[in-house]
Length: 383
Image (cartoon, rainbow, N blue to C red; front, top):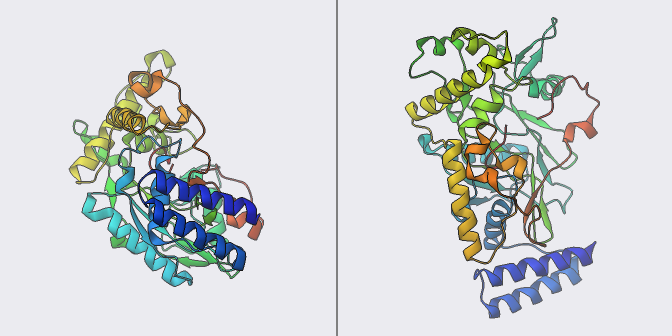
């Protein structure tokens, strides 16, 4: 284990040298420090600069993310010194406020302690902001069907919301080491939400749809040079189709296309009327319109695809191959009309590159839970 981690540490130091983060003298000095630390303790502590560049490269190397163009502007908050659930939660709220920026969203990542200690932290939520889902006696779901299981887990942990609605924000669960998990309610003024209306259909606002502004993925680990950080929440901004073609439209999610089609007066009895497609377009129009009217940053799928092609060109100029997962990069709407559709991608990142890693849900090991709900990119396609 130590040999593999030492090799990964050396490979990461080589990446820092190749990309001009350190010069050759500093590189040699740092390698000697790391080797000495491994000999003495079996591991090593990374510097803040190493963590920062590692997080940026992990984003750059994520094959599922279409929004990697501004990877080098990622702001990284080093909070590895925090060791209590209260302090970690406050840092998450700080991150949320900084990222929201009054609607002018900016990419931010907060890094908490490494998993080489007994007090490694975990954030249980898949995203810091998510809406609850409750299975009703008739089998339907109030809220987000993707969160039914997690909502049940939170109720078993003692969560009792004042009211239930289709858009009730879930509390945040934080666990440090093997200590008991803690629940925290997000401050209402830290959660920016956008009510959804349509520029042409006055009735659209009566549907009562809304969505939160900041997609902040919080259940992925980031691995950097042989060190793994299991709590590293990260946000970018939404691509419109993530909300309008997935979260609000998927049959297994909010499934709003049938009601929109009926309000539009479309023939829903036959699929040849393309009522789903027509309703889907108007739902996307509504989401883009609403976020723009609210002054909240968002990108449409055509612009996102063009930006990704620019990213490909820039990486090629730097002599780097850009990994990509075609099934994630192609938007869930009008895919063939975007340039990302018409090409292949390398699926593997460069060996030794910092990366995001999926983790098992903490509650599955902590307690048995009924599987009665649908299961859930740090930047885009986080639906």
